[in-house]
Image 1 (cartoon, rainbow, N blue to C red):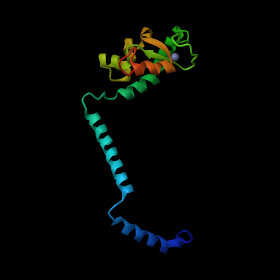
Image 2: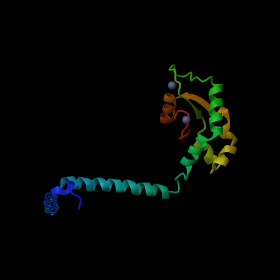
Image 3: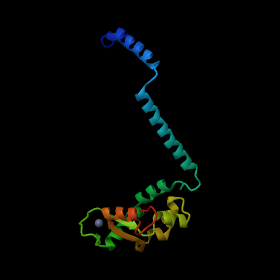
Length: 157
Ligand SMILES: [Zn+2]
Ligand SMILES: [Zn+2]
């Protein structure tokens, strides 16, 4: 038994005894709250599981998007769109250094249409790489586009 730290051992035992007695009590608002919270969490987890079983669940779409975005070809496409638009977004007067190449016809829409499941398939899909399907936005306006669904009606890049 280590010394020093455990010198208050009798105290600890007494404390434990008190706790044990307390746990036999009837009303524990703080514990009830904890229980309630964990039920909510459980519900969320159940919903997540349901989501994955749902046939409409877009299997692997997010990992594919991540791969797609980190590909060399995507960076080239993005650059080509920005170059064509002179690295400017003319709709808003704000000078933004953070420019985004947006797919007018969304990534999700295209990969669904061509039934693209892998990165290789996406790399071969001409429509995804057509710079005419790309448009330069500033970061702020790009967010608005996706929020207000002005141009695309699905999540896209
Ligand atoms: Zn976009
Ligand atoms: Zn803007």
